[in-house]
Image 1 (cartoon, rainbow, N blue to C red):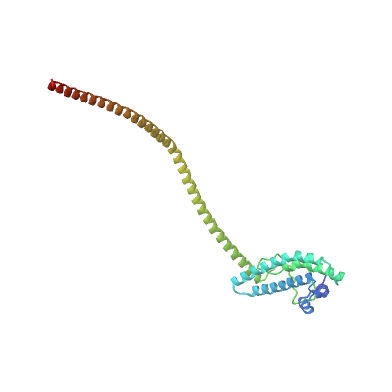
Image 2: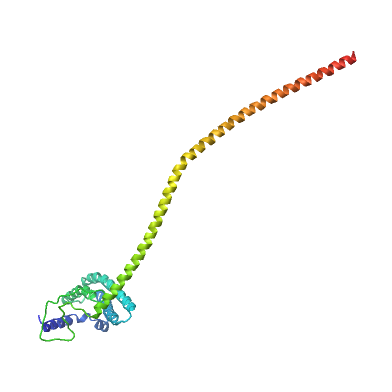
Length: 264
């Protein structure tokens, strides 16, 4: 297939899908009942905005700005890919006034949409594509066929940015690993301390049991001593009372004998 045939086929496809052009849809004021046309218009506008942003990112000199723009483009691509299943469901719905050819065209638009989204440059290294070795005697400036897998300076710049990202990721990962190692060492130290404390408690348990038994024995001995002391005190009190009674009796007898002698 020559380049002229390719261009002819592209022109035919473009004419077939002219009704889905964003500017024409805005001019014709798309009906509010056609959900597919509304959503497809939004997706198409987002794709064009992402393409323009990708071009701006490729021309940006500030690497940080380029990285931020590429990250935003990747988020936009992910969001657009999430809209594809919804467009597929809407494309299968019948719309009043829609011809069978237009119905089929909608399905074709949805089928090529993922490839269009994925083809938006986002700073990642693209896979080399094989063109099949097409050749033609007619050349056009806007069409480039490269079967040798050569890349321009933008590719290497993006690869350098990706390498910088990877180095930063590795550094952060290394710092996280170091922090985790320190935490692991601290946990091991706490584990060893807990193990030592457990062993010390195991050694102290027999001593505590022995102390408890000695305390119980001392309490029992003290109780017995108190009982014996009480008995001894009671005995001493009884003996003292007996002696006092005898002394009093002797005094009374003496007084009685004295009175008897005086009265006699």
